[in-house]
Image (cartoon, rainbow, N blue to C red; front, side, top):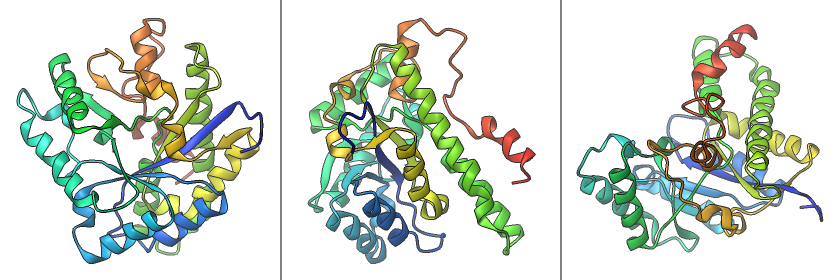
Length: 283
């Protein structure tokens, strides 16, 4: 990171869904290496129960990336109802699968960023995480990379010879646009010069273009930082009181402030927002 860079961002990647896509591990890790940055990989436990998944995860561990808990089965916490005990078991099941990796850290990422439909549900999970020694692996820059990836994969299923490079510029623009939006929102809240975490997923579009995204962010004045250092920022200790709980941490703090009524869309990010633009581009 260049000295004096005011805007900083760390890469956080969800799910580790390596099955069903062309080999992606090497491309994603090489992109991170090329930018000399260590990410946080939030792993769904069911993806590392077999030797192949374990070998792929060992590569992340050996290259120094943080490994975090994203539950065993990737269910939304908001749908668990009044008794979340089975969900707690899902979290500890994932922990048992990850605990042997030296880069495992007790950071927990909520699937779909849904942290509870009621205050009681939200607070029960917060108590559970504290008792287990976890911190919330918050996102500040949310995005819909999963939707761009789904569109790309669907297009390739219909047209195997499709030129995937057509997705490159729209995808880069999307991530940069979301970074600018959430950074602006943070500044409006008084959180200037904070370190952000961007949410992307382990998928084909990032195997293709993650390095290009990071290059464009740097051209736009962003400094890249290691995820473990990013989570040391006091911002990530915040616990917004909103219900339903979740979304980007910046979105939640903006909602809590009461200053952005009528300006915040819900959910913060979704494929429905991106569909018209990709339709217009014929993608």
